[in-house]
Image (cartoon, rainbow, N blue to C red; front, side):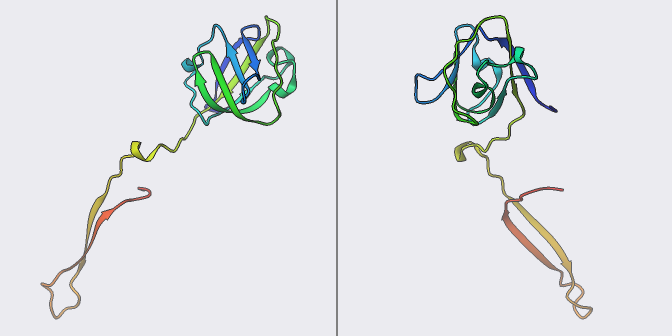
Length: 145
């Protein structure tokens, strides 16, 4: 997975909690805020073998993060309904997450405008000193090439 990050932990440390309206991963040892995740980001739980997955297959796969707390990672979207699971220790759980492009709130976006002038030259040979120009004020470009 190009650009993806991987976090490996122990299943005995991470528990699937479904007691609240939204399912979540909880841990008494891991601080999920240190992983650099953001709400709205998708993660993938599980690996290539049974030794890196939850026992219940519904707890593996793609999950969208709803909120992040030091010991709780809550999801609002999952490919399957997640059941509660308190697995045994000694298995490496893998969580994959990649780069994220996020639309920020309007108050966090800096809007920059530009003024452009393009000289068009003389309209004809009769008045060569009368140079025409086009002015664009307050332009907001969508891309620069």
